[in-house]
Figure 1 (cartoon, rainbow over the protein chains, first blue to last red):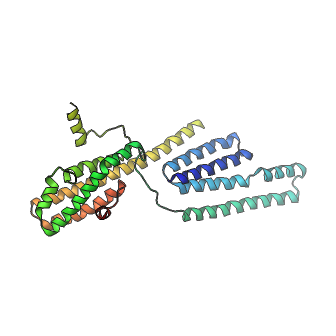
Figure 2 (figure 1 turned 90 degrees about the horizontal axis):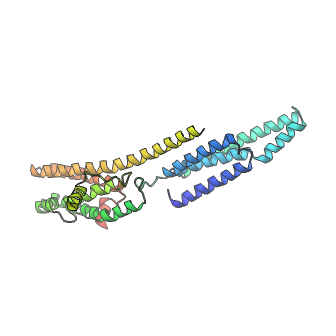
Figure 3 (figure 1 turned 45 degrees about the horizontal axis):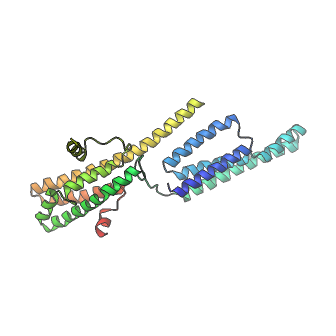
Amino acid sequence: MKDQEFVIARALFEKLEQRLKDSFLMTPLTIVPLSLVKSLLHTMVMMKSFRFAAVIIALLSSFASAFHPSTSSIHSADAASQSLSRARQGALQASRRSFVEKATLSSIAIAGASLASAKTASASGGATAGGVYLLSAKQRYNARVTAGVKGFLAVGGALESGSIDVVRTFFTSEDDGSWKDFSAAGYLLANAFRRNSSAAPDTLPSVKVSYVDDG
Amino acid sequence: MVGSMLLFDTLSNAGAYAYITNHVAHSLQKWKAFAAQTEAITKALKKKDSAGAMKAYQDAIIALDEYLGLVELPSAKEITSS
């Protein structure tokens, strides 16, 4: 998720929370579900599904507006003054109708918005995504992997033309762009996307070499 | 109530963990697939099977592009043209 989208989602949620605080919905019975929704939104932000987070926020805000204190206070005053009169029944029916209308319209709007804003999530790796470890790993291995890819594509041309020397050099050399360097860097780069940056993969050849060098 | 909240939080974290682990497994998996195809090239060349080597090379290029996508690098063609 982009930072801008995250800021928008957070602002929407704060607005919704304020609206709930203003209304009578902020009771012990609603605080717990609200905190659950907060956790759910946090997870969705983590999993980069902004669409679903926006749907939940919009749905909750439509329900909050349906139970706004202005309309609820009117109904309670009405109930105190008139008992089961036709006017009150009519008002209740109108209230229910308006609630259903609001809920239906908001559902349609939400469905449209969710379809319109459909886009591919840009996954950027594991728990270290965007962190210092992944950035340094990319700086370290990207150039070597890129050189290896170029060398590997040169092998394709050599296979077509039948020049075995180029192929042999690629597989036997240990320089940048050779298979040995490419395989080590490529494997390490794939490991850089692991979930835990503190757990070094001990089975890697380069890690074994560094242990031998250290003593 | 607190228990259900903790359970929900745990399940949410488990979902995120599964997503991350899945992504990591994929990048390593694709790298291993590419490495296996490259090994197939060398084996075919040792047997002097040029057609088999070309077939393994084409499969390796597909696996390489999938791997490069997962580690956020451009495709092999884009790297060559840059």
